[in-house]
Each structure stands twice: as structure tokens, then as C-alpha cells.
Length: 140
Image (cartoon, rainbow, N blue to C red; front, side):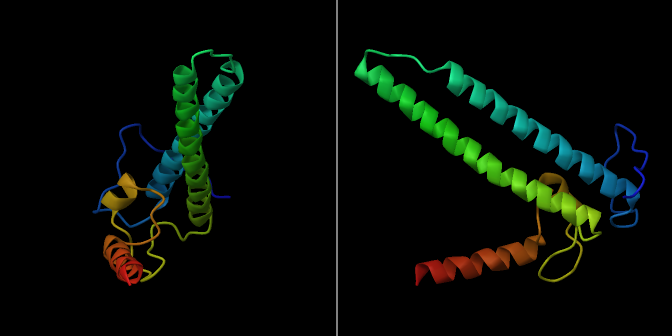
């Protein structure tokens, strides 16, 4: 495991520094870990609310509304669970020095894209091409 790089609180990756240097790598590692912590905390809160929230509601409409809300919350948490696995995959790519590079072209993914979506595995161009190809096959 690499030694943690010093990172000022106001650090933002810049295009004028070497791509995926230690500071950038540490920046994205921390960003991913913070994001994962937030998601896991939200999941814990949901589980506690679901356990505490079981109550007998006599009105059928109110009960249906509450069940709909619970189903929506569970669906949201399922999407977040999948997101956590993508975050874990991105952290593995950081550990393997593969983070930040397009899985299709091998070219660097833009820092702006990585900052907005640190789990990205493709450059914007490769992602757009992939989505166009998916749309064509879906329409057939």
C-alpha cells in the first residue's frame, strides 16, 4: 500500500500537473471513501427507520401511501448498494494504478469528468459511443 500523500483541504486536481500523480490519486481516493461513507450511513438510517417504523395504520389509503414510500426508499437503497460496489471497484483501480484511464481506449479520462463522476470507467467520447451503440441495438 502506498503512503498517503499530503493533501491541502482546498486541493483540486489540475490539468497542469502530471496525470494521476500521488496527490490526484489521494484526492480521488478520499472523494470515493467519503461518498461510500455517506451512502452506508444513509443505508443504516433507512434500516433503522424501517425497523422502528412498523406500525398498524387503520386507514387503507394511509397504509398504501406508507407502503409506496417504503418501496421507493428500498429501491433507492438498492441503487445505492450497486453504487457502493462501483465505488469499491474504483478504489481497486486506484490500488492497481488503473484509475483515471478509459477501459476502452486506455486514454486518460478528463479530470472534470472524474471529479463529477469518480466511478467513471470510460472517457466521455467512449461513453457516448457506447450509449449510441446501446440505443441502436435497443431500437432494433
